[in-house]
Length: 524
Image (tube, rainbow, N blue to C red; front, side, top):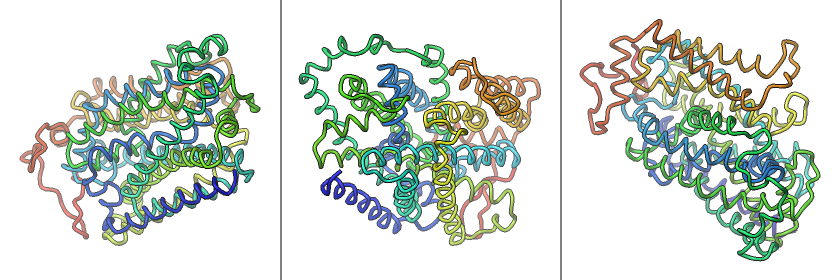
């Protein structure tokens, strides 16, 4: 990098901070901080939903997969995400929006104390929060790895720089700042991705490289599935990502909750699904061609895209692509920080502290901002250990840990909104959650904590989710715990009438209001 690249990077950081400061004026209470007051346009929500699903792992871990195995990086990653979001556009997006519009909650998990009980709410919240600390830590490590390639700064310095910039704008501006910065980041990534695509095609013979390059690439590079990324893995990943990217890991749920209606939430999901189907192809093509242009130095080839960027792009454009790396990671990490803050202040703290249940609007907003900072600090600390034996490598954390552990946490939350599973109550939710977590450990590790070898990746990520799903359904049938109150709650979430007074208002009493005039979820 030279002075021009640094100017682009510093200018980007300055704009992100400025957006955060401007968004601060739009945040008056926790509803604004966590769900944008339900005033976010559907198109902004859709772009934000799309951007919050990326990170620099795309340009490190998945770039390594693209370098080694080729097209399977798209077929077994972004394609199932696009399909999963498309499925959830009608199945989950409108219901998540009704959590805010009809139940007046500010956290995705806030409805669980009424759908199940406080113990279920607390178990899912605590386990999900711990998983997200590790997940976001891997994202910080990914962007710091790229920064070290280009600038020579250490891993710790890179984590500190990106974490502090993100902390400023997402802490002061809440979800509005997240969404608006993600819009700017999308525009930047659009320019950077197209520039990299053009540079790659120019190096390989022009526009015709799109169809002539495949004969020059390693054998099997055009195969839809390869290596450990088999058809079974693809089907398992589709199932997992349908839950995860429709709100199972909370930050995407907030984007649906932030729109003004269930219909807008559906439109938002469809836009995000379309972007996931098209845009990753533009980003992946240079990565597929990387074996013809650079020689990766790391065993997992996670440095291949960075090396190719250095060799192909002039200064200025190099800085723009580096900004693109930052944009995806900061988008995902800031959205996760906001979601975790919502879960802590609205779900965990009130369950553990009587004083937290009486927080007024000012104290609640202060707690939201402080918890955001704490989460970012913890995830940055974890990131510095990414090269330790516990982490092994970034892609292990992102694929195996997050995908494997997400299912047991997401199933009671997501399926709990559907009438089909109304019989599944607290027993089904807690049992499926606990056994799913145990199954993850047994599939991946021996009793002494060492890695279990010989278990294919598709089973490592799918078995915990499958066990949780079966238990959640079977226990609901064997030991049904549906009640008139829970049925009334589900009626409100599933009602197609999104106008004033929608839902089964007659069956559910008016909701009490807190000290600051905020509606609270019903105490059933």
